[in-house]
Image: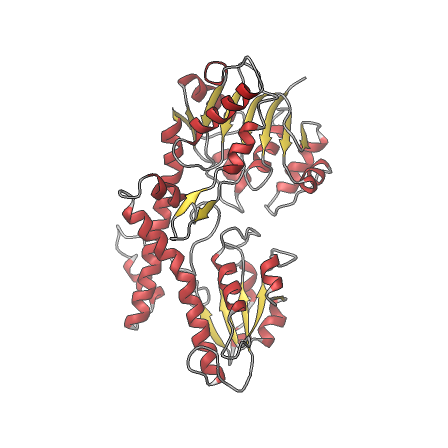
Length: 433
């Protein structure tokens, strides 16, 4: 008996989606190419951190409605929720990497049947849903299948709009878009998500749905870039950026966001490049915003090296001081507060670059301590670079420089006495506020 739904990709989007469908009575097969992920989920456990997701997955598995496997099986609907990263060319140009989406689309050829609905949920460049159809059609032709993808199958794009840390609530309560390659596909997709979504679900065409999700994240990126650029202006002019923004926001029609060390996560740091790639001559503001936000981590790195140089008596680059090492406690590695998600995190980039920094003569003048309460082990590149994962109290006791990168709630326990006599670089205005 075919499953009701087959979800390809059991990460931050696919697993919550598969689980919530299963708890609503749908028979769901979750597919992932990582055997450890499949085994973990089949034991009713999770491999990512998200409030209450463990309870939901356990209930879905115990009910018999959720099972995980390494390959797709027949189902009424297929949801593709795999990563869509980007590639960086030698000239710095960033282009979408759709290899995971293509592989997922082609993997459906042996199991699809006439009348099936194929939904692309991964955030993707405009036109990707059409490419999913074409990739699957090509694979069906190669296999000699009588199925015609355009005639016999329905295709739609239904982007998610959920925030890590609040996924389960926002899956249910946020409005959604169902963009079909045809009106019947959009309507079938709308009906499917109405299984659990209590908000409005708007039907449109696939290209509009694709660009809508990209637009939402590009809008946020541009606004963050304004705040980040403003922080640089304030540093140059000797103005407190946090006070400035608080005062400017007293205007009834002004709402400036807070600056930070950069922009991370799989959405805001990635999606605007998809628009730039599709229309480079028209997306000039969007590209500039991306460049402003991508440059912010390098500014933070320069701040740390300058502070370290002052401690060692060097020339503002941590190279002096008769071999003395400066200990830097980097608080936070996640891309945002109170999650374990390190994807595209500016904090990871900053710590990694600081760990690679060498002084004259090839010596490393910095000892990096990373404090991240939401992970159990460092990313491989940080561990290989000599970064030490430390507890908060231990790191603060050893630090010469305290570098606040993520405003985790756990850091609110830090008392002023723990920071006394240390150089503080607060990229979030955490303690200022």
